[in-house]
Structure formats: structure tokens, C-alpha cells
Length: 420
Image (tube, rainbow, N blue to C red):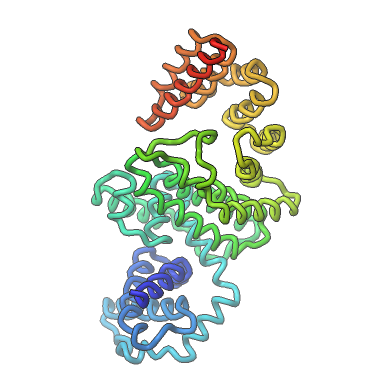
């Protein structure tokens, strides 16, 4: 079992590098994926006997490329490549591949692969599904189960995504500095979508989707190794770590969301939090603030508080104000209003959120928060109407339960205040 475990870890780690290099050689997602799978089968047959190669990724690329070339030649009725014994004796050829990878192709190959998966012609659901299949190597069955769709439907979704990529004639040349920056932003956004597919899940879906968050973190670590001086990449990885660190306390025994103030903070992963905080500090030292860095810094303030009443709401207000300036959004203003309510009271917060109602008329969290503010101001009748709108807008039973938790708590607190 230990032997299989290290082989599986090596194949998983090498997959993005190998698939991306094979894609550069053959410019076809299906050929690259099939070549990699065949190389993995040969690795499972030969590595236990011969031991691991010096560079597993280079080995897989070399074998996969030869397998694919062999298939192409057979289709053209040309002479086949030598047999497997000769293919397995990689010698200097493997070293040559490894040197080329180390010499510069590696970063652009990985970035190109990730960029293809988040091609703008693809809907977000297809981007995530394609990335999980091609880059992460999850089976169609695993992805379908997580998205609660049939296996054949998911297979069709991924097939359509590949067809769109092919039809778009995506260029395979090394991207220039401007295009690279654009690609990097698109890749980061796509990986955050993958992360949120796991992070936002609750109920029966939580266990099925948790691996998505873990896979997004793994790929973000890879992206940070490729771009170690990019503060927004540091910020996004930090944000994922700080959010994922709370995973053990975010859901109750029934899989329902536990509000932040009610979470058992002793269950938070302190090692992961420390890593996230270190990344936030490192990113901020670059003095190039961005949305991911600001969101990570806000998550960091929450993570530093041992108890809810120790939260530095003034710092959160300041960070949200910076985020509003960088990336204006009614949702960001709504989130900032939470800090304002803690600092300056519900009336000041209500004055901030009321102008947002038209823009957020379909956002159930808006009505949940507005209802909370109205309860704090003693306007219970209005609050009940607003809470009803929030529940009507809930996209799932879990979201509705989340709002009901607010309602139960606030009505209870309101009753206690009146009794006092």
C-alpha cells in the first residue's frame, strides 16, 4: 500500500506538468490526456520494479509523447516506435526533457494549460469541470457526483468544453508579459471558483465537494511556485488557506452552516492559519494591494481573534474601505456595513445598505443583514417582512436555514433585551 501511495502522489504531482507539455507537443487535449494516462499505466508496471525515475514528470512526458507518436504513426500506417523495453530505457533522452523543463518551458506550459481550462468562451461551470478533469485528474464520475448530475451529462459537458477550446483555435505560443498577466488573473479567478465549489457546499454535498477546495489549494501552491513574486497570487492562496482552516467548525453534525460567531475556534487549523497570515504579510510588503490580498487580510483579522468579541472591527472597516476603492461593488459595501454596525451601530449601517437594495434585490444575504439591522433598531414588524424576502430568495435549504439561524438568534436577543 505504501508503494502504491508514493506512486499515486508522484503521478498526481506530475500531472499538470506532464499534461501541459504533451499539449504543447500535440495541441490536442484528448491526445495529451490519453498519452498521459498510458504513461501512468506504464509507470504502474515499471516503477515498482525499477524504482522511481530521477524526474517523474520528465519520464511521463517522454513516455507519453512516444506513445502518442506511435499511435499517430500507426494511424498513418508508418513504422511504429521501438518496443516498451527500449522506451523504458530513457537514458539521456529523459535528462534532455528535464533540462528543457527546467530551462523555461515549464512555467509557460502550466500557465497555458490552466488558461485553456478557463477560456473566456467557456461558461464557469465548464471551466471548473474541465480544470478538475484535465489538470486535477478527477474522474468524470467524481465530478458528476459532486455537481449532482449524471455521469453521461458531465461527460457531455466536458466534451463540449473541449470542443469549444478546439474551435476557438487557442494559440500555443509562449505568452508575452501583458498576455501573461491577463492569463494569470483569469487562472486565479478560475481556481477561486474551484475552491468555492468546495467551500460553499453544505449538507450532504459538503463531503463530496471538500476535495475541490483541497485541489484548488494544491494548484494555487503550484501557481505560487511559478510566480513567487506575485502578491495577488500570495493573497489568493492566503485567502484559501484562511477560509479552509475554519472548515472543521463551519458545519454542524447535520451539515448546516455554523455562523462565524458560533464556531468552536479551537477546531480551526492553526498551522494553516499561520501559513495564511505569513503569506498575507509577505504580499503586503510588496505594496501592490489587490482584491485577493484585501480579502485575505480581512480573513486574517477574523483568524487572529481567539473570541468573537476580540475581533478588530476597526481594522476590518479600513480593509473593506480599501477593497471598495480597488474593486467597487455593492456586495463589498454590504460586507463593510457589518463592520460599521459593530463600530458605529445599526443606524449608521442601515444608512449604508438601504441605497443598495435595487442592486441587490435578488441577493438573499442583503435582506438577511437588513433584517438584522431592523431588529437591532426595534423595528421588528419590518424585520419579519425583510426576513421573509430573504428566505424566499434562498438558493438552497441550507441558505434558508442560515437565515433562520439569524432570525432565531436576533429574536432571542431582542427578547432578552426587552426583558432586561
